[in-house]
Amino acid sequence: MSDQFVLEAMSLDDVSVGRDGAAIVVSCRDHDGVNEIETEDVHDLVERHGLQVTNTIVNFDAGEVRHVIDSNGGSSSDE
Image (spheres, rainbow, N blue to C red):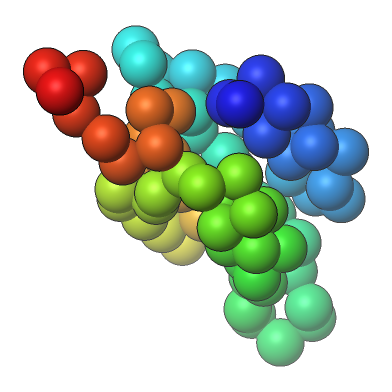
């Protein structure tokens, strides 16, 4: 399921996708011209795939928002 999410996230404008261990990291740089970065498309995609954002990191200097996403869909691997 997370492979399809990665492919769809990569198709979004001003978004890059990477991995940090088992987590998927989605970086958003879609400025609206008013010093805001819109991340709604990423959140909608996360929800559609049954995944969960576990952390959001804002880097003001770089002008990006990074979402760390649990690629296990929020379920523990111990279950």
